[in-house]
Every structure is written in structure tokens, then in C-alpha cells.
Amino acid sequence: MGSYDPAMSRIGLIGMGRMGAPICANLVSVARAVAVHDVDPAREQAAWACGATWCSSAPETAAAADVLITVLPGPADVDTVMSDAVLDALAPGATWIDLTSSSPTAAAPVRERARAHGVEVLEAPMGGGPDDARAGRLRLFVGGDGDLLARHRPLLAAIADPDAITHVGGPGAGYTIKLLVNMLWFGQAVATAEALLLGRRAGIALDVLRDTFADSAASSEFIRRDLPSLLAGDYLASFGLDHIHDQLATVTSLARDLATPHDISEAVRRLHQQALKRYGPADGELLAVALLEERTGIRLRE
Image (cartoon, rainbow, N blue to C red; front, side, top):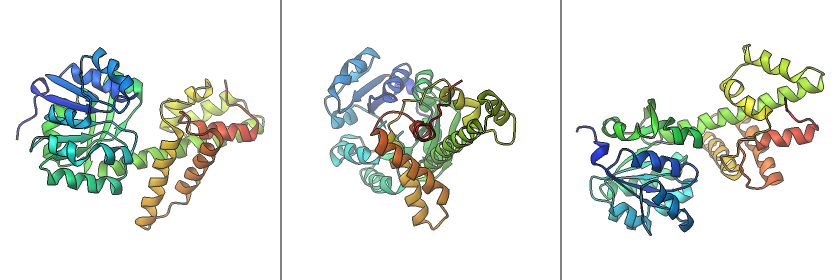
């Protein structure tokens, strides 16, 4: 089966939030037509503004698409959106690509229902934030059939760095990899914050701590790329603390199911649960660090 020509494709997009809106704009730049729906009718204007067609319902969006793409907050939203009405509206042989950070366990029944309707499925949870989405340089962790991915690579290259569209395995592998990446990143963030707070309390200058960590065996992608934002007072308000906790809880649940150690993962989850209790479902990927700062009485600021 040959590649799917984006210039001839009819794309359906469900989800016009902070990630979906810039993804929509990039899809419009390459596809013949893009039809869009979101549960929030206030996002209709954003759809028209980027050149897409607004649909009043998810089934209407699916009926207008050869490829349906979902960009949703979490597994429950995917389960709700991908109803039998939506799957019936998709033509047999259509492809559904889910960009949501989901649970492999929760996604499995939805995937099987889609296949029973004759719909092909790829999962491609995203790495990156809204700026990456606007620039079309997302990272995609793709689970599913390799030939199906090869067919849709030209389309996915409109929203992601072509070298960062990675086939990580069969169904479920993409969701699992994304969860593990998130768990490690959030773990690095809070571990780095604890080290910085201890160093400051011990009287070491923050810039010395930062530079030494960055140029030592302690360095990480978080320290190299994201620590400057924290030190500038930016808690990265691009994702809700409630969704962060849900994803971390999914990791620990998966570890329990598969009987693997998860003491550190559970500690990271518990800290984010405490941050959620303190701050509520606010946006901020580094709000657990804010909680540590509050408890210590030290702000990590240059």
C-alpha cells in the first residue's frame, strides 16, 4: 500500500485545545480539506481562522474524513468521543490516529471497537508543547502497524519532526512509552528541585549549582532544556496538574499489574497528588516543584 498523499486527503480533527489548534493550522497547510469539532463551541472561530471547516458534532466530522485525528485531554475523553456513532460515520478502511496521552489498558477496548467497524488505528501520543505544535516539530511515539504508519508518515510530517516520528511497537506501545517518558521527566524535575533546594540551604549559589549539574554526570534533558524556565519563574503552564497526576497514577497502576518495582514512580505520583490538593487542577507542569519551594521557604530564582 502506497503513502497517503496529504494534498488529496480529507482530515477530521476532534479537539481544538492548546495542542489541537496549532495542529489544525499545520494540517490545513497540507491537506485538501480539514473538518473540525470540539465540545467547546467557543472554539469554532479558531477553526475557521486557521482555514478548517467547523462541524457541529463528532459524527459529522468523522463523515467528512478519510483520516480522523483525535487530540483530547485523556482516556475518558477518547472513550466518549469514539462512540459507535462516530465509528459508523467513518468509511470502512478509514484511519483513526489518536494523539492523546492515554492508557494502553483503557485504549484497548476502543481500538477493538474501531477495528470491528473496519477502521484502521494508529496511536501517536505527542512529545512537546504548544510551541512545538505551532512549529510542526512535535515528537510522536507511534504504536500500531508499521505499514500503516509508513502510509501516513507524509501526513504526520506536517505536525511533527519527520526524524521524531518513531515506531515504538505494536498497539499499546506508543501510549506506554509516552507514559514512561512523562514519568521520567516529572521524576527528574522534582529530584532536581530537591537537589537545588538542599544546595541553596547549604549555602551554595544557585548559578554554581545549575552550572555544575549541567556539566556533570547529574545532567539531564530537564536540566539542559527546562531548568532555565523554572529559574525564570515559569512553572510551564501548558498542562493541567490533574491530568499530570492521572498519567502518573496510570504508570503506577500499570507497574502493579505487570509486577514491576515502582517505589520511585509512586513517590513522584504522591508528590503530584499533594500538589493537586494544594493548588487544584491548575495548569503547571512544575507545580510539584512549587510545592517543594513552598515547604522549604526558598524560591529557585536566578
